[in-house]
Image 1: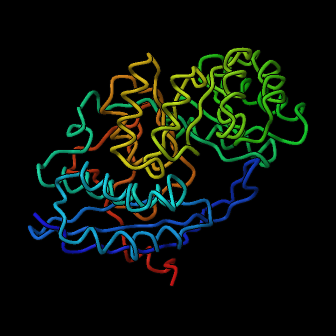
Image 2 (image 1 turned 135 degrees about the vertical axis):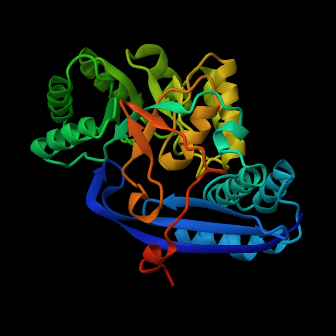
Length: 362
């Protein structure tokens, strides 16, 4: 087998409702970067990644100008070899950032091809643990009014989510506490409630906030500080009362290795679209398992339902606000608090290209 085609594109996809967090402010769209890989046997794989609104063209350039020429002619079935070649091709100018996004998209496409060649859904190809994965709704709602926040929470529960996450990190801690208290009262004592800071705090602020929020039975505190501060995470994990989830802004396996081995994270949170793809996501999950940790996910839920369904140490799948429901033929299926991994070959995501075309970045 040989790769004979690599086609990449960028789309600015509008969100139905503008969303907000403590780091990125209000967001009205996200960038979707796609790559389609074809081999000489007639098989095509789809890979994609996304940004919160900046950097998509840089990722596209890395794919189209620097990776595509070397991918042509390679065997798409030798995924580890191709991954290693991409890593070292971009290593000097990368080791994370846009380079990892580009590698991720291509790696996802190669795994999609592997599933299609064998006729297996990705989750079974990767190990096939359980197609039903617990799922939570990831609210991106920091500056929603309290009434809008409550209405969103009711809608999440009506849609079948079994857990809810909300944003914290407002200017005053008292505001965060009041909003968390209101959501906890609304969902009752048995619905897991997560809170997400998006790196807004210092370690000292995170400890103060975690102690104030602990009475509301928080399932995890997500991204309390920047991922560069390993020492701060160790301190929060050891001195604070809440489990810590982090990893959506970690773009290499080695970052996860450092956090896991240091005891700085309770729920590693690799994002398959930016950590290096399915190949790296699975390595992080196995490392977490070796340390008796549960693994979770961030974003691209149509892909992560497969990776979480493949491993025995799956925690919750995040149902993310940056969804592709309007642009795919088979949206994620959710029933009674669980997402169900599909049985279609590969990852089973089929984009409706005609709908996306209106949002293509020229």
